[in-house]
Amino acid sequence: MKSKSVLCLLSTICALTVITIQSVNAASKDKPNVIIICANDLGKGMLSAYGQKHFTTPNIDLLINGGVSFSHAYGGSTSTYGRVSLFTGYFDCRKNLWRFNRGGVYAREDTSFIEQNEKSLNENNILLPANDLYLPQVFNKAGYITGEIGVIEWGHSSSRLQVEQHGWDYYYGFLDHSRARGMYPPFIFENGQTVRLEGNTRADCGMNYEPETEQTEKLRHDTTGKKTYAPDLFINKTLEFIREFKNNSFFLMYNANLPAQISIPAVHPEIAGNEALSPLEKEYASMVKLLDDQVGKILSELRTLGIEDKTLIIFTSDNGHEIYYQQDGRVSKPYGDKRSGERFDNSYFKFYSDRVGDIFNGNAGLAGIKESNLEGGIVVPLTYYWKGVLHSRVSDEFTAACDLLPTMAELTGVKLESSKDGISYLKTVTKGAKLPKNRHIVISSDEGPVLLTNEGWKLRYFRPKSKFELYNVRKDPQEKYDVILKNPQIAADLEQILLKELNGSIENGVAY
Image (cartoon, rainbow, N blue to C red; front, side, top):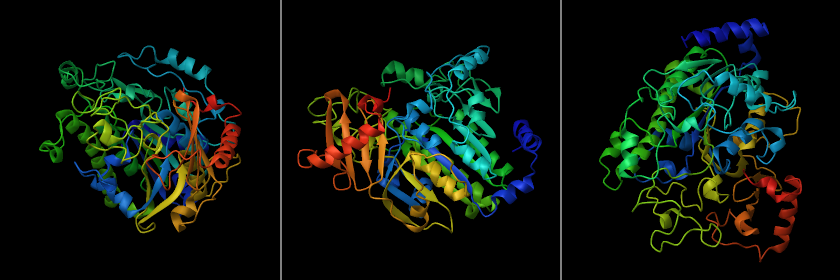
């Protein structure tokens, strides 16, 4: 990478820790580079590997079909909850271990206010104990150089100090997840500095507008103050980071703000002639295609540099599918049955793609979408690709976002001194090992918490009706049959486990 900030990074690493590039290599030799690509609000059904019919995602499909993929991988019910679990290794109900700040604190065109706002963020910050590692700190201990690009941290807003405290050697992108919904920010952050983006003057970063109307379509296509496209910058910085540290051991996390809110310079050629899609749907599909193209660029760069077989790529998403292409006559919010008009209550009458009119079937036939604790809201794609080392296989073990940190600790040989909620599934990836049958996962949501076991049981608390539901998602992945009346003892046992995890209050599992 030729930018001054990263050249300064190298000298800073050497000056502050009295190490050299050679000793970094020695500390982590025989360990792979690790790249995590985390998509934003990407449902499995948007990928052709999982049945998408209206366009292809060949590069992501290559990772899925050529690596070890998981059929039951769980993120969060929202971006924030999925990411905090991934970064800390804990269930997202452990709210005493972190603080979610309000979004939008950087939503201005000028930068004069930043230091004052960051002061408030830092005063209210919560850090894990010193011996309790964040994900990048695991790699720090293993001698890796760490970088994060795109949508930084878990949000809703973070400060530059917080990013450094969590262990990142280099970062570039948004510190505000609300602003990250737009693709044309006036400024972003790079290693402690604010970077102005040429021609971008929109305080809202050129955010998408919903639902589709004549007025919102005009606003979306208005290019005033929208010149520099952030996703292009992010992939370029990603490739530069890989080039700069190709001879070292590095950990890079690319948190894309794709596909999420619709804002695309041009419809992708593969989609332009698809008469089954509306103009708005074509634009959203093009966002997914752009993400796939970016994955292709990363793969190509690794091959060019001769380090594809030395690099583990993990592809996932923060939460399940979300619909950003609502319009009358297609799919509309609040969601209801397209034929009868009846509103979904997500209990007796659940959201399914065919009922609502989602032409993409973005949740791959599951019930629910983002913010729901139904499978469509929390199941995410997850695949491990390491050319020549891992071979094509699908695992049906239940994994959670919090498992990634312990898995990376085992991969890099770092001993965790704290007891995380997550468990390592490295041997599941490398050898197909089974996880403990009694292992359980807790996920929070606005609808209430859920508890999942590796046997397939899912105890769902549905807050709007103050009731529990029980499903076996191995046998019934679409959650069509609530079997709580047939299995009262299983439900009672799982309820006790869930309440213990929530410190006795079911409200601790509500994501607010």
